[in-house]
Length: 249
Ligand code: PGA
Image (cartoon, rainbow, N blue to C red; front, side, top):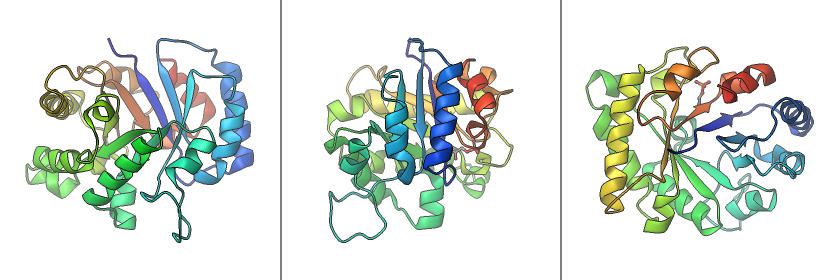
């Protein structure tokens, strides 16, 4: 059995002071437990403060929401994987649908970012998912598989085996609509099959998360769905009591 993963994607919320306050409150009400993994993705400017707040809690991981694929240079406004590492991050979110839709991130860019993350020692968490029109056309699986194959295309087998994937249907993000657990299972199973083939064997070490309007009331049902190894949570991760309930499910 894989340990369930609960990941909080804060998006553009919580600067350093709010991040520190949230994490101290959360850690006080969530004692260490080894049967699950919790990951926080604060904004880049809050990473250092978060890394410091989490320094004595190796059970709670830190991740960066976005990285550039180059190691350094003239890329105004960008953050490198190594810089996130320096702040204590061990995971990098790549290809979130907001990056793809609002900032023009292509499948090829996600591939470069996954490779840059892995090179710097960060575990990539690649997000994939279809838009409403793609779902309505019945193209969910081809879209997800294209994003997945291209996104992981520059990774070595050992990096593939330890990565994280999040299936986040775009129509479910921030809308209050969630995929039915059985529909998530179908897509997660296809993702797992892809990894089995790519790794020529077991893909048990790859955690496949679901994301899209997860809240404290639907967490139990979604996390219990076959092939759902964890949850990537946006809005509902911003309230410390709600988030504590979710990770304690
Ligand atoms: P949501 O966002 O939980 O607010 O739908 C999820 C995500 O974008 O990762």
